[in-house]
Length: 386
Image (cartoon, rainbow, N blue to C red):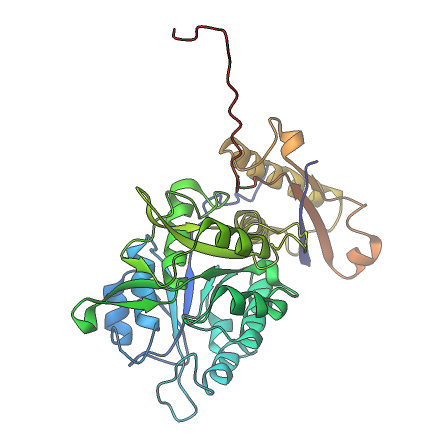
């Protein structure tokens, strides 16, 4: 029997135990000087990456991005090495890179054999068609793509390139600008520009651990560790142009350092008006869907009738109540924070005949406060010194 879970965002018991911990597992794809090409390997530190994939190499951004991920708080990664048709090195700007990437994600390819991941990073990749392919793959695998812009990107070129990247499945991705300056150990620590995806993936992992997946990975506590500067310094006005388009800016502020200053998906443009405008809202939905799907495997082959539906409702309600107590949703009562439906209205006789049970879950999402408006009023004629 198949379990079909539909997650919607709304303002509106027995086994299994559904896990409530969100662990960020980042999949990094690119060329490295060594390592297998037929499988992704798990690494839990940059030292492990060096041992399995040969460490940093000036011809590739992959090793640097993995290093930035761990420097910024990441702890779990999967790394997939891709090569050109002749087995040689290939960079994201090479003509051979996208075909190799497509092959890795194709049915029967090595990505399909990875046990688990929920973030996707292809450091330095800015190709529109390849980004759209990765958005589709992210949607199919309940993962989230952290997309890079071109190193030479400007406000004008970014806005011009959005049409394809903000299409179908764009809610499963976010784009960050500009590139980040950081020391290059291969050049005696001289600063060099790097794509933001590795840094941002680490910030997401760090935020998930400290504040959970429903906290936006942005703001004054979303500092870029190991970074020294930004390739482009944006003004508030320029930030105000890019943010409403769904482009997340990296900024530098006095006393805060270098920070992630945006939390929109690529479907987050004001003109799109998507329910999945914000990164934490979309990632929370993906987390709920994955957790409930994994935690409800016990239901497979059970009789598809009211006793099963009742058990599913109770189990999911218990899971959601635990998250509610952690502050995961809007609403001061469970009834205002979520709902679960699994009954004859969701699972029809045709569904039963096809071996499918359907669950509809709605939740009141927490949205980040992007703008803080302060109004100052003078009170005349009164003494407020006390």
